[in-house]
Image (cartoon, rainbow, N blue to C red; front, side, top):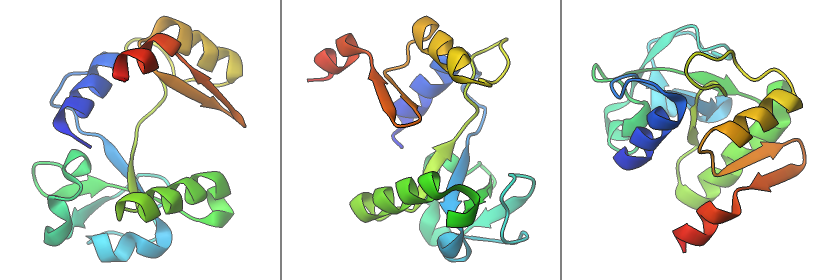
Length: 145
């Protein structure tokens, strides 16, 4: 993730810019990238060291001390997210994506489709995946061209 994207993410969420974000990673690839904590780690409860050779490849999710609070993903836990991670890995060579809660400053996390649509309507979010549906903000995609 480029620095400007992290800045935008924190702006959308109403977070301070110094706040770190965490990675989701395929469980079968986690030990090549992270160490020093229990594996698997499906609940983001533990801090893991990021392998030195990966720190520059995933700087957005690497804290200043070289660690990350990871969430490992398996097909059994969440087949959809595991498929997304595999597709992202095939396209980029990186089996890691940013994991952050779906909420904005001062609001609870999204709990159902109605909450998700309300957030989409009130925040500068470009797109929302809701089950099998993709909702896009047309103006954002026209500006990006």
